Image (tube, rainbow, N blue to C red; front, side, top):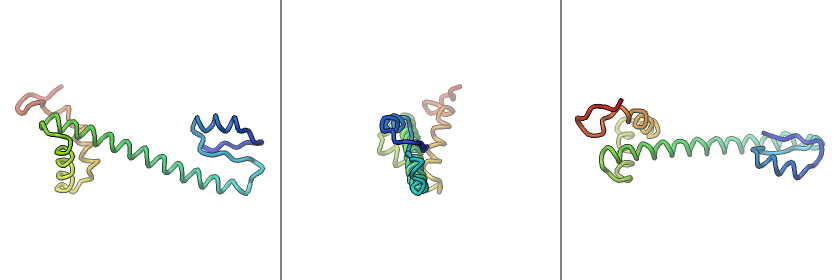
Length: 117
């Protein structure tokens, strides 16, 4: 989001930045508009990439937790298990982690026990 202002207003800009505005431009700075838009688009792409990375990390951590609980292993072994299956199955690690998280409620808590409903 870019705030377009008719006059300089530092208080407004400060408040807008707290609410998610990525940049501001003044309508007297017409030549600077394209530069401001380019910078905002770059920053938004970085922000979006970070959100995706955090989401993938959280999903991987959940999958590791499930594997740790189901197999009685530590965090390092759980990640090694994910990494190895990813390599052997030629699947992205995040896709494998998603499958573990999505399917864990269907698995029994102990071998041979009925699945949870």
